[in-house]
Amino acid sequence: MPAEGGALALVRAVARLLNAGMASDATVAAVAESVRQGVGAQSLTLWMRTPGGATFRPVCAPPARVLPPPVHSLDDAPPADRAGSRVPLEHEGLRIGLLDVSPAPGNAAAEGLPVIADLLAPYLASLELSEDLAGEVAAQSREIEAQEHFISLVIDSLPVGLYVVDRDYRIQIWNRKRETGTQGLRRGEVVGRPVFDVLTRQSREQLRAEFDRVFATGEIQQSELEVKHGGEVRYFRLSKIPMRLEGDTITHVITIGEDVTDWRGVQAQILQAEKLAAIGQLAAGVMHEINNPLATIGACVAAIQARVEDAGHAPADIAEYLEIIDKEVERCTGIVDRLLDFSRPRSGARAPVALNPLVDETLFLLKHHHRFKRLDVVRELAAESPSALGSREQLIQVLMALMLNAADAMEHGGRLIVRTGRVDGRPGEVFLEVADTGPGVAGADRDRIFEPFFTTKPPGRGTGLGLSICYAIVEAHRGRIEVDSAPGRGARFRVHLPAAA
Image (tube, rainbow, N blue to C red; front, top):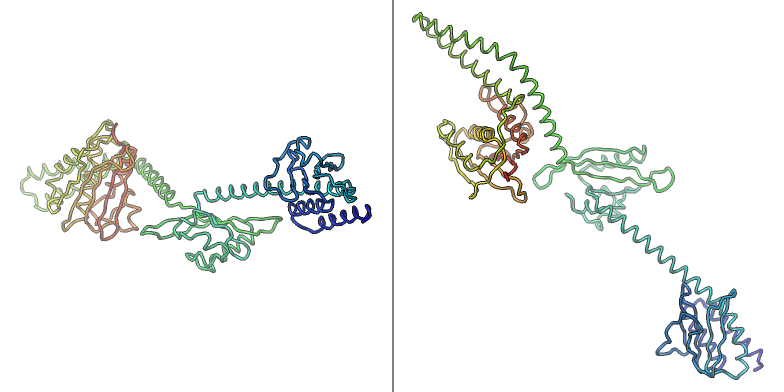
């Protein structure tokens, strides 16, 4: 075969391989093998630059069991054979590779090596560029995945339930709080499904109307939802927020559900404190406006009783009427005195108060009370008496009021249980507890029992101030009162107090 023909045939063979669309590594290996066979060489090593240009790696034909290690410079590349020949691969003035043929062929086809080198150089340069681009794309993909993972972690870490629906009302995002919420649905079970098939606490029509309002107006919509879960009622504030992927068109709606049950409790406590403050201001005025007339009436009653006794012949009903007036004046004076506890609460020195002796002392004061004679009183006191930091007199007043209320609730007998102890998990708190086996407190009344003048007792049996005063005293001690009750299963009042050091 003429020299030109052999070289041309080799060039054409290599060109066909380069245009074959094979994977880059396979293509390079096939080119190296084609060149080796075309020039009749025993072996051939193609050194090509790695992505980034830091080193050069070898591709051997035929494949070597042990490849030479990559080199930083082509001058350091070990020769395949001393008798071999090397042809540099250059592109745009840069040396990008090397053909190392061993042993040096002596046929005419070897004259095509420089042409092959000129053909391979731009191809290897393009491979290097494509690998660099592929590495950059892979790095950007990893960065995007890391950002998506980070955003997903942020969404899952939110202490609120969050989900997103599209224009077809299908769920696209469902965060971790929604998975662990009252419904407990996994995202794999809900993503892609219509929201109406997943959320059934609201009617389909109501839910669709809420989403449509956001899609139509672009305004944030807020509402509250009451949920009964595990025997208790929880309250959630729902916020529906418009979302735009691009332009002005609303493409999605983000719904955030926040549990506001505890917040409502705090609001109720604030309202209670405001009511107590208002009662205190009222009591300050009542003290001056009513106490003096009551004292005058009491003095007149005493004077009339003295004259009746001196006369010795007054009708019997006059004495009875005077006694009634005197008792009612005394009752009104007691009401005013209790009101004054709000405006000028008795200041008791704060000191360590052992709760077990406090219970015993209060029970001693009440043991002759007629309401306690029909009760079975049970002490469940801590083995080692816990101590609270507070006023002994005021704490006796609180405990006595709670016990008298419990006795009133058990008109036909029952069990009164008094407990003391330390609060689990809170080393800085101790508690006093009064429980009864009475009819319990209705749900509608439970939220009002600490309101001034609210009472469930018949007229003339109570003023509705006892628990209000207890609340004010405990709050002044930086404590709190918890109530656990339901109709038919009694009531339990637990007073939490700061522990004495």
